[in-house]
Length: 241
Image 1 (cartoon, helix red, strand yellow):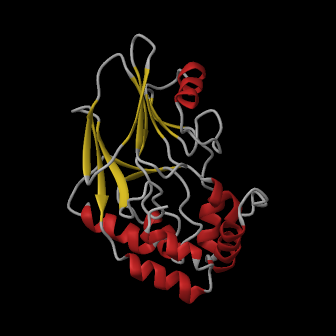
Image 2: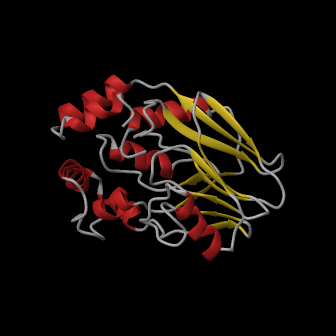
Image 3: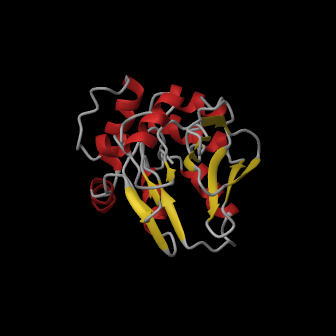
C-alpha cells in the first residue's frame, strides 16, 4: 500500500461484499504515500484472519534499518512517516513479522523472496534459486517488485515467466507445478498501469485472479504535495512507475 490511502480505500470498497478465509498482506504498508496512519489502521481493522509480513520500507520507517540503500525521496518519505505515525501504529509496523510465513503447509508468503526478504524477484534465475532452495511450498505469494507477475515451475523443470496485464486475468493452477505469484502493488504500481493492483486466490477452485482498480490518483497526489513530501512521489503515481 505504501501509505497510499486513496488506493487502498478503493480496493477495500471493491471487495467489501466478498468474504474471504484470510487476507494476506505482503509488506510495505508505509513509505512514499501521505496516508500512513489510515493505511495501518485499516490493516489492523481488517475482518477475519489476517497474515502480514514486513517490507523493506516498513523496516526503515520502524528504524530497524537506517535506509542507507534508499534513494533520497524514499528516505525522506520514510523519515516523514516515522515522525507522523501514532505510537501505536509505529509499534505495529515495528512488530510486523519477518517472512516467509506459512499460511498452510503448502502456501507461504514473503515480501521479496523466501530466501531473503529484500531480494527482488524479476528473472528466471531468481525464480530458479527459490524453486531449488526453498522446497517448503508449492505456492508462494511475494511482493517488493510492484509488478503483477507469475513464475511457474513445470514438472520437467522449465520455468514460465509472465507479467500480468489488463484489468483482470485468471490463472488456473495445475497439480505438479509450483508457483511464485506477485499481485503487484496497491499504492505504487510500477508496470506503467497506475491502477491499484491486488489478487484473489481461490484455493478450492485452484484459481488466481489479478484485478486492477481505478482510484482518485489526484487526491493521493494532493496529499503528498500538501504534506511537503518530494513532488516526484506524487508525479510517478499517474504514470505507474
